[in-house]
Image (cartoon, rainbow, N blue to C red; front, side, top):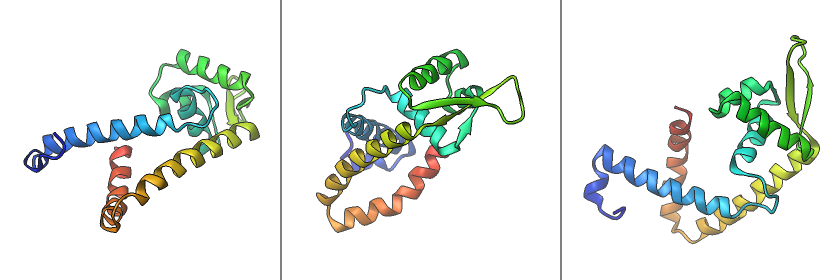
Length: 147
C-alpha cells in the first residue's frame, strides 16, 4: 500500500506508488473537464498542436505516439468542430500543417482553468510543508515525463 514506507524505499516500490498515485490524480483531473465532450486523445492532440504552433499530421502522430491513420481521424474530428484548421505546408506542397483555431485555443484555456481551479482547491487542503514538498518535486516529475 502507499503508506508502507518500507515499500517506498526501493525503486520498485517508489515506481509502483508513483504509478498508482499519478493514475488516480489523472483520472480525477479528467473528471474535472470543462463540458466539451472531447476525448482525452483529442484534447492531447489539440494541446500538442497549440504548443508547437503548427505541425504536419505525421509529426503530430509521432509526437502523440499513435499511428498516422488514427491521427488523421482525430484531426478530422477536431477540424469538423472548428478547433483545428489545415493549411498548405510552407515548403512542401504535398503536405499540410494543422494549427489551433481561436475556438480551439479558447476551449483549451477553459479546460486548463477548470482543472487548475480544482487542483488549487485540493492543494489548499494540504499543509504548507506538503505544498513545499510538491513544489520541489514538480520539476522532477516534469523531467520524468520528458524521458
